[in-house]
Image (cartoon, rainbow, N blue to C red; front, side, top):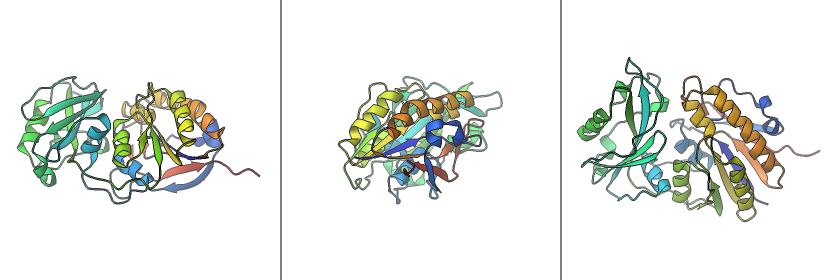
Length: 309
């Protein structure tokens, strides 16, 4: 019998009610815990904290995205995440939009990660890492694109302005260079579709279990992911099952899509996990509000299987 930690990314929000989900409601609320621990309320920090990594290198995001997506980088490369958003007539960003498939520049290598996500690798610029200031777009309360211009690098400022079009722009954030994390303390498997979580798994020496149609969004193969996690738990003492669609629906400000996806997770994933003999824990890494599209940093509920008798 193994342990399965199921992280439902962005599960909670001001309207979230556990009683709306039959299988989740059948579990015991063990506690509410702080997964942010003074950092940003986003997947990287929260998932690593849930996995017991308390002391994180200051700059990790871009590198772990590259690691998870199999993008080659060198130790002196500067790596940033680029997130594309729609702009309204006032220059305020609203919801994510599709990223360009290609972008040629002598200053960086551009990689399209799917949907609104991209990664930029700047060769031989890692030395600028500590002087650069960027802004996490999903954590911003201003929603004014002009206030997200990177600071500390003329090159990054120029790239930001080059990506600013009439109806969309690219937020640059998550600056990093290659770094090391301590290995996870036991044999462990990871089932996920999100690049950053794949990068976390590789950095911690955890085994990635492939699922053909695991997309990291609401169109993911939930049954396939649940079955893969259950199979992994027969072999590994610890299995991480990460489910990301609720977070993406919230960023699209689609409360109905988020609710329907969580109902599907409850029906297709949690029912299977709870029918198994494994130790099951369900938690959100952070909340995500479908009204604003923003991440939330409140303490998150942790659910466990109710003891019989």
